[in-house]
Image 1 (cartoon, rainbow, N blue to C red):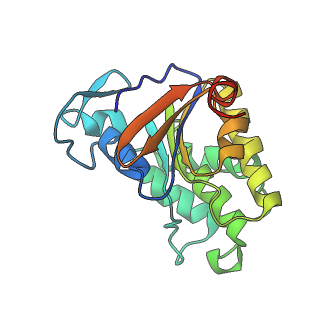
Image 2 (image 1 turned 135 degrees about the vertical axis):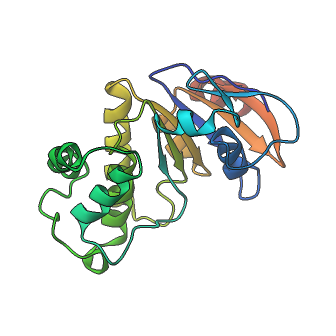
Length: 206
């Protein structure tokens, strides 16, 4: 696998379950050791400087891992502390993050009261707490109803409009077409083809 993601774009990894999308993300983040090759994230070599690179990265994992013991706002506060951000700065960011994710009136809500779509949007807000340059999203809309998916899509488009770089895995072709400037199609751990969505449709689909 070989690809480069320009700053301020959305790059998609599209493929069936088991194609290697999540493993690729884990290698990029320094969480899985690749057998060969070189990786740079935010200009830093991975995994040797993975910790420094991850300070500039936000991650939306495939499965929500929000702490059910905390309220919505407390989840953001505690997560921000992992980056060494002062509580005063995190608290100042929380209202904007919740407003962006459509959870402006849910700051004191318990996690158990949130719908699946709300939890997904909270996970996205949490990934932004350190104001990252790059955001990794592992199948961010899997299991959501169409309305919730569209809300997530809208927020992701807003992020690229702000100059954020998104690396997105999905097995939804319509999602990849709507969101991605370029995408790579993976299967069985290999990159099959890469290009802009419209280019790939014109080249490979009748």
